[in-house]
Amino acid sequence: MRYFEDVEVGVRLELGEHHVSRDEIVRFASEWDPQPFHTDDAMAAASVFGGLTASSCHTYSISSLIFSRNPKRMAVAALLGSELRFPFPVRVDDVLQLSDRCSEKRLSASRPGVGIVRSRTVLTNQREEETFVMDASYLVQCRAT
Amino acid sequence: MRYFEDVEVGVRLELGEHHVSRDEIVRFASEWDPQPFHTDDAMAAASVFGGLTASSCHTYSISSLIFSRNPKRMAVAALLGSELRFPFPVRVDDVLQLSDRCSEKRLSASRPGVGIVRSRTVLTNQREEETFVMDASYLVQCRAT
Image 1 (cartoon, one colour):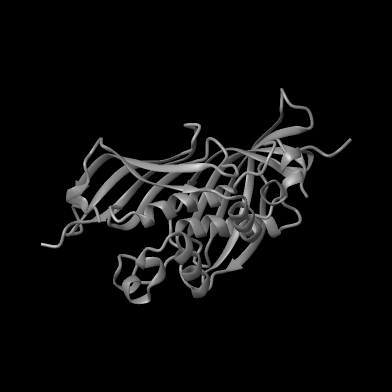
Image 2 (spheres, helix red, strand yellow; image 1 turned 135 degrees about the horizontal axis):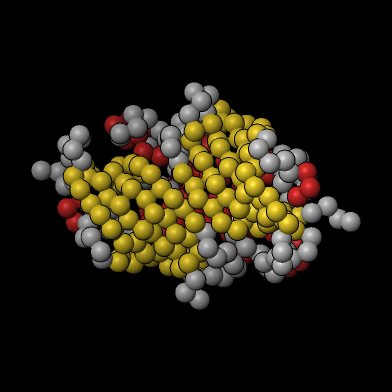
């Protein structure tokens, strides 16, 4: 785990990747976002996207999944605030890479043992398009002393 | 379905509700966001939240689920841009209500048969706390002529 002390401001870290299958897109959307451009090939082909795209909830969940699989992930105690954007859709067989870069960190003034980290997390596809951008502030644990 | 012509600027619409069970929180987080404060009761009790909270991906997915179940949902062709925030966490046995309010609409200048709608979608718990706020622009279908 990366604790507060390990987080380096300004350094981009690669957190891992995930291949997005057609089945995963359809399965996630069928449960949480059953709109035809996420679940039906023919309707998706006729949509403005011209093919199946992942629900944005699914895209966000993929970023969370890659993060949680990484043994070097930040020791997050809480998400304090965030802004999320989905500039490009995720498509069948995309390979998504997650990276993050800390822009700011400071110790908490009110709570011992934690710090506040601000970072940008980006999920990029194999065409170098950003499918997900999250600017967030986290409460991050310090190393036990 | 609410087509572009049906959308009224400034009117708040109630879209439905969803009860969040412990099992749903743990099941979603186990698959997409297996951090202990989302999956383990004891670790969650010791966390800054003092109890289990839903992953923010799950919270977003719940808003999508309520939306998709509503026969009067907007006829969305695409999500153009969005900003999401999660001011309060979702907890076990919360009953979440989804509402939205359109702030602006206009016909597309470049694409016949669709309009652009800007709206704020809010997921509120039984304590009147906002757990999810999404400011978004959508491409919305016009009625077939």
